[in-house]
Amino acid sequence: MRNPWAACGLIVVSVYLLVALLAPLLAPHDPTQGNLRSRLKPPVWLEAGTTQNLLGSDQLGRDVFSQVLYGTRASMRVGVGVVLISGLIGGLLGLFAGYLGGRTDDVLSRAADWTLAFPFLILAIMLMGLLGPGITNLTLVLSLAGWPHFFRLVRSEVMVERNKAYVEAAQALGRGSLPIMVSEIARNVMHTFMVLATIRLGIAILSEASLSYLGFGVPPQIPAWGSMIAMGQHYVDSAWWLSAVPGMAILVLVLSVNLLGEGLRDALDPRLRA
Amino acid sequence: MSFEFVFKRFIQLVILMFVIALTVFAVLRLTPGDPVAMMMGQEEGVTQADIERKRVALGLDDPLPVQFGRFMAGLVTGDMGTSLSSNRPVRAMLNERFPATLELTLVALLVSFGLGVPIGVIAAVRQNSWADRAIMGVNFLGLSLPSFWQGIMLILFFSVTLGWLPSLGRISYENTPLRITGLMTIDALLTFNWAAFADALRHLVLPALTAGTAYSAVIARVVRSSMLEVLQQDYIRTARSKGLRYGRIIYVHALRNAMIPMITVAGLEAGSLLSGSVVLETVFSWPGLGRLLVDGIYARDYSLVQSTVIVLCVMYVLISFFVDLCYSVIDPRIRW
Image (cartoon, rainbow over all chains, first blue to last red; front, top):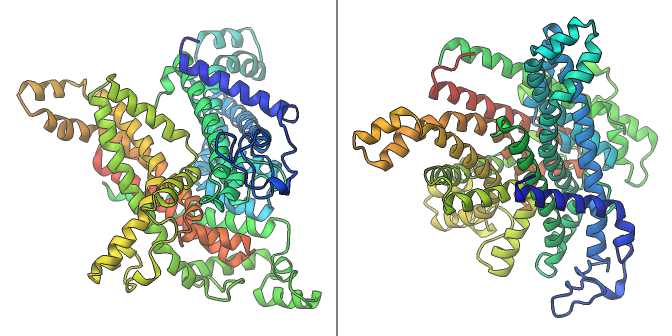
């Protein structure tokens, strides 16, 4: 990869993934366990800061640094989960619709258009509010909103690929539709798919954070950046780090994901350029 | 704009609204948990029989199709029942809150076009200069910002640290103007209440700026790329060789043609501006529909939640409808 920004993005995203995996080893404290004797401590570089709490502590004396490290897990689980589920469903349906055409295509395309016409964040807020917070529910609700994007892209790519010589050759050799779709065409639309998957990852992470901020996303007992910010907002005039730090964690991750996506797009598929 | 196009699009709109109403109804009835039991469960001395009576009174024991028919009839006639948590008619509550969301969304739209279009044009005209790079860099940052957090950071800077701007609500209590339209700024102007007008504007700055930022970043991107394309066309060269002023060429000849892709994206994203303001109303304690929805969910107030969601969805769908109409006015070649 020759684009230095995209390389930076890749490195930062990898670091976040590692942090998510190794959070229990890296975190100096238990993120859910408070120490009432060191409440609302500022980060280490401020006057009253201590090395005990590098990024300060909250109103219950919980370590912000450890909470942020653990928060990576919730965001990554939901973000990656949403991209995998919506990508798989949207991708497969797009493959079928694009290759088979006709009625299948009509019905599926209509369904995708309708889904996109829905104000999904509003419905997601209602749905999550009624179902109650939970990582699985959250992943499913956000996937429901995400699949049409993958569907549309894969469908249009497959429609181009379908008429190429290699597909005709495979058909002439007597291979069935399914093997052709899976082993021939899917491989050739994979790179565009990856670009979109990266872009959607950033969006999924932002949606997760927004819903957790409202209290409808990740359950309160699991550390998550969105709910940390919501709690920190109550102390914005006395302990700014409580809302500032987790927000920076989101910003840096989403920025890196987007840089990576942009780099991938320029390298693999300049046509996707908006 | 042909009549047929508008008619077709209108029919689609009606079907979409029906599907949305059906979905909202189905979601509310099919999610686990009995709303009445949940609402009354925490109160002292509530028996199973009380819960049953309340269910019958609310018509929740009727067959689902009957309930849906009543729900639709209520929506069409505007009778949306009584809020379970405040005992007030839902319609009155929506009436009270709707102008706040409308005002915020309109001002946010103004902000985003006011920022996005000139920024995009400057970046395109000075392509690859440091100005272009700086603009696009900041823009990219804007696209990656969680907007609710941006709102809190603006509060931290402008309200807490500098003390320049208010951080909550639409207006200070003592300044509230006589309600005519419900839009604070307009009402203040209509009653020549300058203090209220200034106060309402000060309250609008942070929420509208936050809601508009992400959207203006999207607009700036599209304007830049379509301007770059338009600026290479023959008629631009012709206009320049005729000796027209450069500013005129840019803002009259080029920008007009670059508008079409912008309107498409604007339509696709305008809905997200509305959805985003649902979250931002919580950040800024803005007394609009979004805040009402979130409070309704916290209170398990089902009748309030369903009507608020539907009003928000209808707003969302109407925005895309009007953008589609604008689209065919600007570019007469577009026909469905």
